Length: 345
Image (cartoon, rainbow, N blue to C red):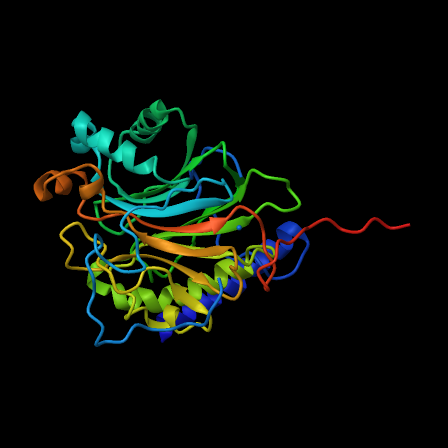
C-alpha cells in the first residue's frame, strides 16, 4: 500500500510540473527521461468480463474467435496493432539472416508493432532491422525508448509503424517516471494517429510494457495506477491501449483488470511459442475505444513460416498478439466522429 501511494504522489507532483510548464491544469505526471531516443512521425464496445476459471485455454492455431493469423483487410478501413516480445533481441539474432528475415516478415503483417526485450547495445540494430522490414516495399519507421531495468541486463522498448498509414506525435513520447521503483521496467508511451483526414483520424496512445515475471502480479496492480496517470496526462486522449508482455493471463490482471470497462483483447488462448502459457495481451477501455473492430488474435508465425518448434524458438518464445481498429475516430456510440468545429458567424 505504501508503494502504491507513492505512485499517486508522483501523479500529483508531475501534474504540478506540467501545470507550470503548460499553464494548464493537473495533467502531466510522467516525465521523459533525459537522453531518451525516438524517431518517426504521429487513437469497443462491451463491459469487462473475466474468463471462467473452468474454461480451458486454446491453442493459437485452433482457437475459436481468435484467428491465428491477421485477417486480410481489403477495404483499407482498419489498422492492425500488435505486440511482440522478440526474446533477447540482440546481436545473436542479428547475426542469423534467416531469423532476421523471419522477424521482418512477421512485422510486415501489421501496421504498428510494440516490441519488448531489445537487449542489444548496438544502436544500429533497430535502424538496420527497419531497413530489412522495408525491403518488402513498405515504409516503416521507429520510436526507440531508453534502456530500462534494475539489473545489469537492460532492455529497450520499440514501436515500429508504417508511415504510409500511421504517424507519431514525437512530443508525446516519454518513459513513465517511477522514482520509487514500483516497476522493474518503466513503460514507454507514445501517441499515434492514422493518415486520413485530420478531422476524422483515429488517434491513440500506446503504453508498451514488460513486467517482471517474479513480481508480475504486484506490477499488474501498479499498472492500474499507470493507466490512470497516462490517461490524465494525455490532454484529452481517451483511447489508451496497454500492450506488451504482462507475464500473467487474462484471468489474473489484478487491479488493472478491475478498472470498470477495462478489457483484455486476448482471452482463453495461449500466446507463447510452446503453446502452454498466456503472457501477452492488449487491453483497452472498451466504452472509450469504440474503434476496436472486434477482431484480435495470436499470430502463429510457426505455421505462417512453416517452421519446426525448434526453428520457431530461435525467432522468439512468444507469438505476436494483435487487434484491429478503425482508421476513423468514433464517438462513444461507435459513429464516425469529426473534430471539425462549426464556424462562427
